[in-house]
Image 1 (cartoon, rainbow, N blue to C red):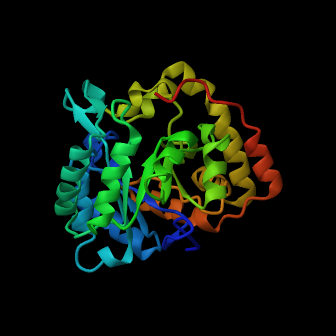
Image 2 (image 1 turned 120 degrees about the vertical axis):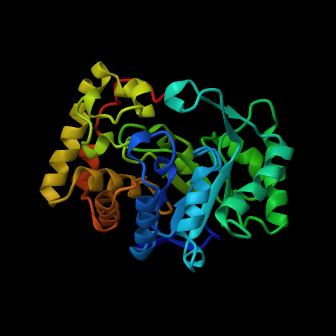
Length: 323
């Protein structure tokens, strides 16, 4: 797979990464299979996927353990392992049944969480430790300072931010270098193209788009609410309600038309568009299915033309908010 660097000073990573959330969290709770997910993780590494992204809140906690098990037996040193801190799940047994994600940026929470994450991951350090969300009750300088302590202790090689403004990135950088910024970016979520991604490009900060396939929608997998798996968190999101889902099908049709011209799949086109948005953009699509993994990896070799990109850039905004 083609590679790029994780920021100006970071290691080389494949231009397509792997987000592991859906293996144990939020999506399709009745369709999870830990052994199948372990096999997909190992297959991804074989295919050149080197950025593996998890978080302590996924599960909660079970995702890191799954990733750690998959990377045992020598694979750990072949990947850039990323996890996150700063969100906790409270109330309810799942996001689809009343659970809420609560921000926690207290320095003591950061210090305690890294040790738990390393234990679950079965490693003595992570390559990238990310602040999952900024806690409005804690100055970002205090939270970021605690993450910098994690680097000083050798428990993380570099640190990153998620879902932040340019001003928040600047405030963090005044304390310690920012290696990466992770935010949602896809053909139906393009807000970061206005300021955040251009800033990251100028400053040599890696940009890691999550949900680059629009939570699976842009791959053409959901034409109606009935297509969503039972108990799936996506069924609670505005863009997946019946009226919005029907209106948003027009986006998929354009993506599908571009895909047909290239003999590709809609997922490959959607991912290739994301990769084309910057020199150090590494999308982290999630999957627990070998077929979709192969589909996603192949997007690294799809070169969209200027006309393709212009047609995709012209897509209208989607119907419905993100959350």
